[in-house]
Amino acid sequence: MTDPDGPAPGARASSAPAPIDEATILDKWNRHIARVAGAVARGSHVDSEDLAQEARLRLLAVTRAFPEAPDQYIAAVIVNAIRTANRRESRYRGDPLDDQQESHAQAHTDDLDRALDVSAWVARQSVRLRRVYRHVYIEGRSQREMSQMMKVSQPRVAQLHHQLLTSGRTALACLAA
Image (cartoon, rainbow, N blue to C red; front, side, top):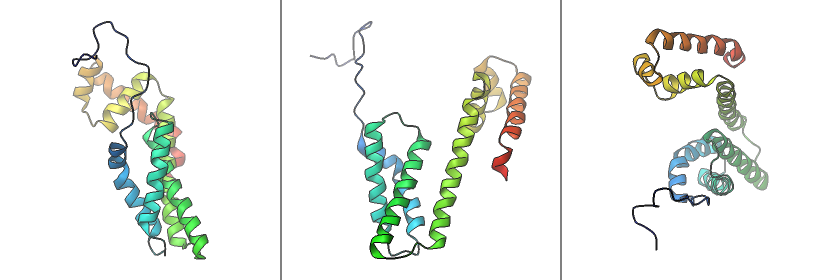
C-alpha cells in the first residue's frame, strides 16, 4: 500500500520514468501543428487536417521514445512530418508542390534552424552567461531582479549582459544576414 503523502523521508524514488500524458502533449503542441499544417496546405489539394494528424502521430511517437526531448527538436519533428506528409499526398494525387507552399515551409525550417543555432551558442557560454541569457530573454527579468537572484551587483549584471551581447554579436553575425 502506498502512502498518500508520498514516499517516506529517505526512501528512494522509483527510477522508472513517469508515463507521458498524451492529452497534455497534444494540447501543448496542437496550435503549432495546426498553424504549420494550414500554412503548408494553403493553396493545395491536401487537407490541412490530414497533415496535422500525421504530425500528431509523429509527435506522440517521438515523445514516447524520448520523453525529455527539447522543444526545438519536437518543433522540427512536427515541421518535417507535415512537409513529408504533404509531399507524399501531393505525389499520390499527382499534384505538383506549389512554390509558395515550399517556400513557406522552408521559412519555418529556417526559423527553427536559427533558433537551434542560438541554442547551441547559448549552451557554449559559461554558466553565468547562460543564466543572464535565460533571465533576460526567456523570463524577461530586470537587472535589479537578476542582481538579487545571482547575488551580484547591478553593474556586474550589466557587465555580464554586455559580455553576452558582444560575444553573441560576433558568433551569430551569420544569422542576421
